[in-house]
Length: 396
Image (cartoon, rainbow, N blue to C red; front, side, top):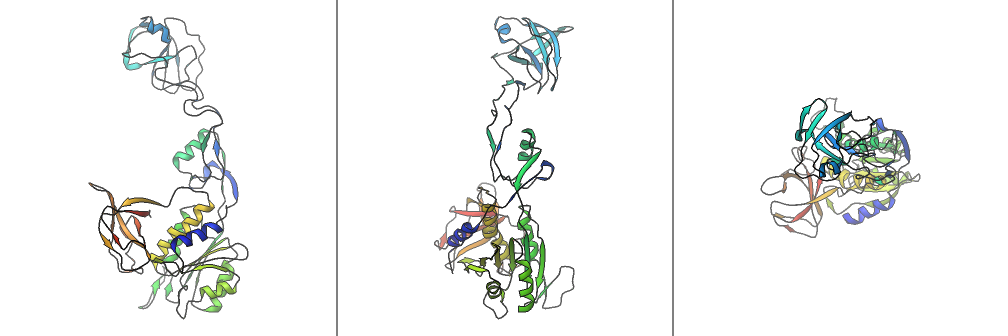
């Protein structure tokens, strides 16, 4: 049995960059950038009016000129056709390009129409380039703006559009097989008897991968039968990633570790000093297939997918954002074991912000994570946590 830190180290060492593909910007929401992105030109690309108003020469205003003739109205996307002379102004709209002849904008609220096409302008603290966003003040051309490994959310999508990325290089999704095991399991749609349960782990695992826009190519359920399980795992190992739930502990029907090794999968670790999820098995196949074999209890699966599988995916996708944040715990807690323990919790906001444990009945409790925000780590080297101590909080 190895430590949690050692398990993460082993997983990191075998993580590999996924292939790249170029896709339309229309379909890249939620995907991960596979290259750095640079600006194609200055931003703003021109001196831009930051509000509706009147564009004038700053020197005119300094010379106490207050009455101006409107020579042109400029809208966003329109070029000026007239040179500005002393005592003249452009009426200009927010977002429009400010002609180089003007270097100050007085807002509409500080103007008064005194005759057709004539206005009186006022400003309490006039300054050059007032209300004008200068060309290139946000970003200069060929400046780094987005990093490889950035998850494409709404803001990133808009930025890609602004810099002209109609086609975007993203990481290609690996192929994925999910295998659930257990004689007691039945499909959600099936009737169960008094000693059967409905299979849910494949949904947990699938959801964890879909957070990274990876969908399973193969979904299988296998009875605790060596021949059937061998056949199913043989099929699964044709994929880049295999995740198995159940059958990895030390029971008479826990065939998964031996079958995987019979099929040529090299074990990198089996059992980690954590609770829940201690029996987890991890290995790599002859075709570099990555295999996670998880315990069957739902909470074990939820924790393992977050701390191990998500860690692996983030390394493969160059995502630098950590999976946890440090927050205070808002209660005292005594740990009764020598393992790294992960506890479902609620993130409280108020006079104090922090996490509070949720009571549950072991890793098989189907309601253990309902109404929770995630889980936190009670480290193995700290028997007692005091209210106010910082802990690692993993948000669902």
